[in-house]
Amino acid sequence: MFERLLAMLKKEFLQLFRDPRMRAVAIFVPVLQTMIFGYAVNTDVRHIVTAFEDQDNSSASRAVLAGFQGSSYFSLDYFTRNPLETTRLLDEGKIRLAIRIRKGFAEMAGTGKSADLQLLIDGTDSNSAALILNYSQQVIAQLNHELLAERVKSAGIDKEIPSIQVQSRVWFNQTLESRNFYIPGVLGLMLTVITLLLSSMSIVREKEVGTIEQLIVTPIRKSELILGKTIPYALVGFLDVTLILLLAVKWFHIPFMGSLILLYSATGLFLMSSLGVGLLISTVSSTQQQAMMSCFFLIFPTILLSGFAFPIENMPEFAQYLTVVNPLRYFVVIIRGVFLKGIGFNVLTHEFAALAVI
Image (cartoon, rainbow, N blue to C red; front, side, top):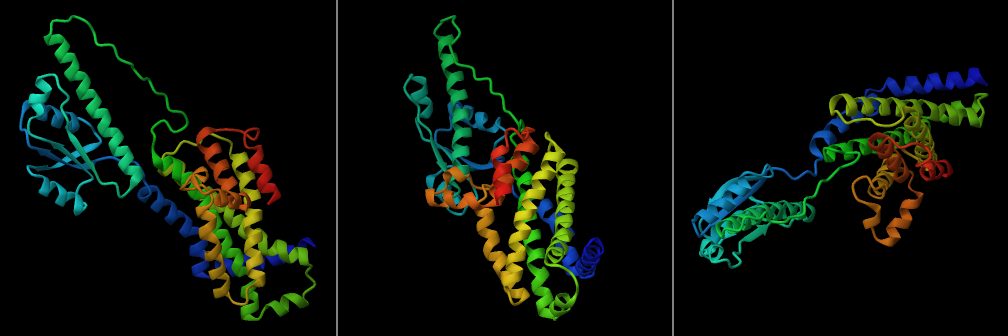
């Protein structure tokens, strides 16, 4: 049995690596995609292009300007004098935030009344808009506190203004880099795409080129054929995991907090499910083109319903039920848990059990 299996493995490896396109898919695509995701996929909101519309032109309005200029989140690139110009910049997408201070702002602040300013935010991207609003409110709250302290001091009251001080502590991703969240997930995403594409071609390629009859007349058993068609792509999958892991840790400096044994064990379980689906597609397909189209039909729902980019809790209830049979959902949780949190098997029992069942 071992000799027959070894011969089958040798044949599959030769067939895989003698094709330049397959070599590229197996090795270079995961590396390239990881680099693209590492640099391009970034949900952090920084250097917000801002317009400042000052109709008051007073020391109070300049204090507001200084407050926003002092924040690392805002980039004051435009200064306007009328609402039409500000609206045009928002319509053209040149700015994401406009700060409008109307005439009489300093007078209202000087008499102790509420002095209003207006924030106009491009809400096309709702998540970014919410962050911009939050950053703006922090700057305004600090300005308000300084104004109140100055007023108390000018009134001759020698008392410190009581305030609540928040000391925050971030766990697991201390720098709050979105890259640290996404790149570990890319490992599962790439593994899904590569193993599905490669394994879905394995049997249908034999049918298309006419060598399936040669396999039928050989003394090889069914189990040996399945193992011979699966093990090479499983090894390629482990190789891709290692390459992406090295890129994440050495190139992008994402801390790896957990156990490599646990990560590779989860990878083995996940590969059994993804390669199984790929072999099923390859068996029922008549041509390689049909197999590839079937893969793409399956890959996109698998990724979208995995929690890689969008939280499963935010999905409609029927979509959440669909994620239960998605192995990538559990694998992504394991990867991020092991990678960023360093958690062990006792915490991930449910995910490992689900992958084993699938």
